[in-house]
Structure formats: C-alpha cells, structure tokens
Amino acid sequence: MEQLKIIRFVFNMLGVNTYLLFDESTREAIIIDAACYSHDESERLHQYITQNGLHPTRLLNTHLHFDHIFGNRFIYDHYGLKPEAHPADEDWLLEAKQRTRMFGLEFPGETIALGHYLADGEKIETGGMALTAIHIPGHSAGSLVFYEEKQQVLFTGDVLFNGSVGRADLPGGDMNLLVKGIREHLTNLPHETLVLPGHGEPTTIGEELTHNPYL
Image 1 (cartoon, one colour):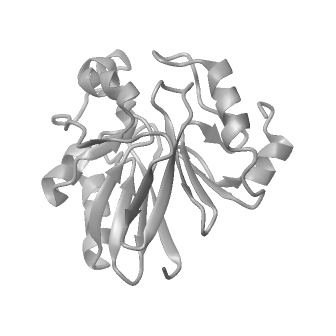
Image 2 (tube, rainbow, N blue to C red):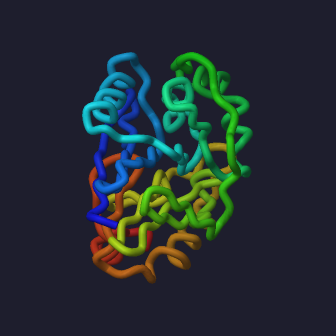
C-alpha cells in the first residue's frame, strides 16, 4: 500500500471530526464518523470525494451518539453504504431523534440502519487498507477505536482525546470501564502512534502517557 492519506473534516455544532482515509493507488476510501449536518457540510465532503476520484467502500462509526451519525443517511443515499458499528450502541441509533431533541437540536432527515455489526478484534480491509476494531466501552457501551498498525494511526472517537478522555455521564457510560479499557488496550501501543480523536486536535500515545491526567 502506498502512503495512507487521511483527510479531516470538522462538522456540525458539536465539532465532530469526520475522517476520510484512502489508498492512493486504488482510490478506495473509508469514512469514519460521517458527522456532516448541513447541506453545505455534506457537499464539502461529497466534493472532495468527487474531485479526487475516490470510491468510498466502508462507512464506520466509532459509536452511535447522534452527533457522530448525522451524515450517515447522506452517505447511504450517495454511495449506497450502510454504517458499521458495535451492536451494543444500537439503541442510540433507534432513539436518535428523541435523544437529539433532549439536547435542544433536531436530527436531520432519517437514520439508516446498521449494515454490519463490528466485533472486537475484527479486521476491516479494503483497497489495501487494514484497520482493526478495538472495543473500549465506557463513553458508550459500544465504543470502538480503529487501529492502522502499519502506519501506527489510531482513530479513537470519543474514547481518548488530546489531554482527556470521553464523558461517561450518558446512557451506557462508565468512567471506570473507560479508563480501564484505555489502559489495557491503548497504552501499550507504540508511543509514536498518532491519535486522531472524535473531537479536537491530534495527539500521540506518548504525549497522552506523559500529560493525560486519566492515564
């Protein structure tokens, strides 16, 4: 595989990072957390894909909190891809509209059902790319991170942030479980591993081991 290309888009009122990763040789692409909310945000993602001749083949969700799935329907309508996520989060998908309103927001359009349940340790391979799903509950019951071992890149969703960890006060949350999972599954990765979180700026495992008060 040639150098993995990773493009970050920051979408919606909660500033979610949507990642588009692709293999330059095959032009196949993976979308992680399609969070585009407005028409303009959806078009920005669509135009980048079109202008660069990319072919999205997988839509992955780190978890199914509403701010991370706003764009799932758009991706399905345009590319025929159903989202893939851990089944323990499916109640968030089924109740997306109601839970979005609890935060004073409106869910755009209709949700789209999961097309595939991702399991802990599952390999996600397409277009020369290979990610491993790692189940780390605590932010939500079904939170996943995705690790690309060859180039040492970790997509952490709302599990691990630059200087912090995800909140655990929403349904399915458990701070003790979250911190335990991070320590058991992530802190033993190479220190230079690039951490790309669901909100905020990138970091590395080494930086978090040094500065993150939860670790």
